[in-house]
Length: 178
Ligand SMILES: [Zn+2]
Image (cartoon, rainbow, N blue to C red; front, side, top):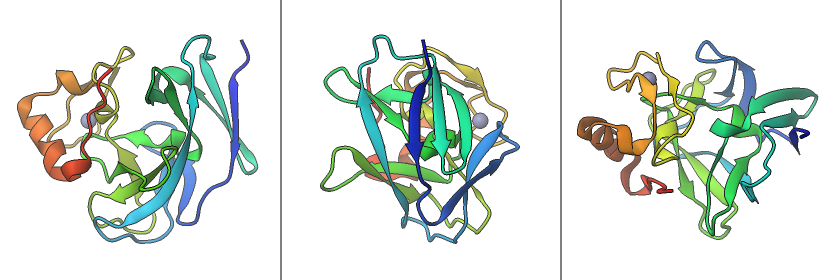
């Protein structure tokens, strides 16, 4: 099956470039204070059945190919959410951002700075907060003191790692249960 194609533009304040974490990554082009909105993202709701194994992401002049399994997350009524340009955002166990539901639009979310973000800093999120169980776990060597070692989903974290994420993300730490 053909890859699922997404065409989009970058919002102000972010760019895509090579990351030491894993291939491509999303980076800040402006400084953001802790708890401020880095950008507002949009996702597309899809049915998981027959979803292609690969996402073809066209951001302005560049094309990126991503495996679907780690880039679609549970949404509502059995559907899944596919992200746009920020599909390239990498996992980190001590992430620089977390997301929060948008006030007026169920298809939008605000990406919030988990701490002060400097120009050029990589924007990361914790993939363990998106899935109760990650059916496609992967190893992590992000170097954070709270590094889980293997990203297997929220239910597999230790209590200490869960408490760390709750403290970091506050009340927006909605662990999406599948
Ligand atoms: Zn890690």
